[in-house]
Amino acid sequence: MDLPKSLTTVTTLSKIVATVLFVTLPLGAFYLGIKYQKATSPIPVEPETSIATPTFKPTIPRPSTDSTTGWKTFNNGSLSFEVPLDFQIATDDNSKPSFGSNLMSFNVYVDQVMGLECGENINSELISVDGIKAHMTTIRGIDCGTGEISQIVMSLDKDKSHYAFVSTLKVKDEQKAKSVFKQIIDTFEFID
Image (tube, rainbow, N blue to C red; front, side, top):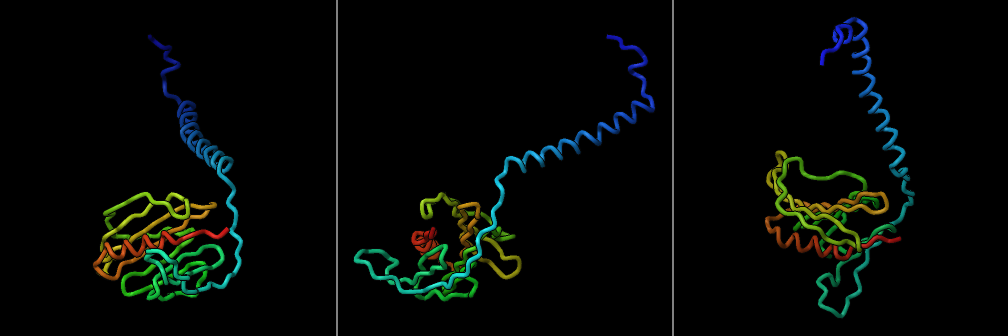
């Protein structure tokens, strides 16, 4: 099909029209995409900031073979879990509970992204925490200069908040640390 020469000749006007379209169409699409995302995304709600004093009390012994019998309970008014008696609290910040022992550390982070910068995912599994699906990942790697470490990271989303439970192993016995981590997670519950 032969087109008239006036339609195939490059002119100053055709260059200007092409340039304007080349710039405005992507910018317009980007702007409309942002407006669409804002229209379809839920409005973030700031969490209420109530200061609750964490309480620690030995768990009442149960007449069962529960291996967490005698553990102490952490409760800051919004979440509760049990840790072994030899775990010591490492921070006074109620919103970021942190515990440690000779075996491992155990930290809870809310709405923060956590993980190793230099690590290799060696195991990942789907588990349930207080009835909510969560991902648990074991990571082995080099902590960018401090030596070889392993971490167990479990994350879940609840009520528009992201929770990350991070345990850094202080010994080479990954199986024992993973077992203790799972026992702590099994005692975890959100307080409504």
